[in-house]
Figure (cartoon, rainbow, N blue to C red):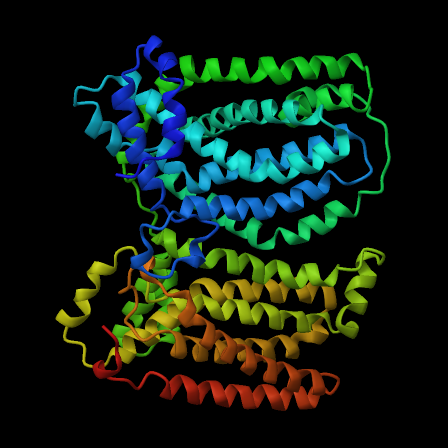
Length: 552
């Protein structure tokens, strides 16, 4: 087993563990196994970089730290602004706190919420104090690594700008910040476990992972907004509610020592920067941990009542869009699978969120214009054409129809007397479109109808028909296996590049034609009719396939 440098460093402090009654040798062995397993965990942020099962032993944690190091460049640039040190550090600490809690929840939930580990180790000659010490040390090692990767560049920038008084304070504060992150994360989990069962907690973690993936993908828009305020110079006005913000605790010492602000309230906040984390970690050890460990057993509960949704509504839609009985069954099955597949949501939902937000954000890129002016002038007054960006992103939702965590159940396709696999594929594609793609497009259509009025209805219909054609083309090129029959971990994202480029070309051609005729409603109507004919033909011929055409 690999010998980690961090463990050699930890050996120098083993006397502290031994004095606390911890069996250090056993704790070290547990930590060594934990750190080895960390290298096999795929980060939410980096999940699209996973190529194959052969890379399973790659140290994804190191790759995550490298990714954070890249982000730290942008965090460091915040310190170059001309506002006060108090405000600069407040922003940096706030961003760090958000990112560390987010990464803790999205990528390291298994450490805090590991029930199997407890059930395996505690019956052995391992006392609970040693077990909990290994768990807490593991979390601290992880968070220290994240903190260092996020703050190394800001540390350099801050030292250059504020002098050598900056590094010692900044380093100590980041150590204290990791304690706050542990308490905040555990406290959030404790509240959820108190109110809900384990299945609900898993769902909440999954949605948070989706949120984090969206933030990391779309966060560049936030940076541009942050740099827009760099020229503002204001003086600090104390507010009582600032005492509730940990970022203000840690920013206060810089306001006193660098800005020279001797405000008494800042001195109180500075004291809280030291006292606050200590009190919180003591509260965590004495109050939160016992209650938290007790409620962790809820994670073995898969939930009592399963929400089955509107069965009649699903059957009505299935009868409306599907002719074959097998196709109808696959349509309903696909919608149910999408609702329960957490990894599927993690792959697809960020794209859905971006499909909604990107067109809206692009309308307001010019901050000098008012809300109404942005709508009227965007794309030469044809802002609805921005929906073509969403059309491209929505097409990608069909790429993962063949993936599932429960892929081993795919043997059912061979055991059932189904002669035509195309019927199954057709039902799966329709189920995906009605579950994910069409609702998002309708939401976009409503937004733009409110902004632009009913005059764009024909444009919306045209783009919807382009969406159906493009989604089908992308699916045909990217999927060669049966629905939900391939493990998520072995998805080769590289294979999706070719279909994506070809689909982009098709959408570009359709968009160019649409732009050329958009001022003539009759031409747009004729174009829409042609697209309708193409749709009918494609949907009839695309699923005429046999079992020989299906990859195993």
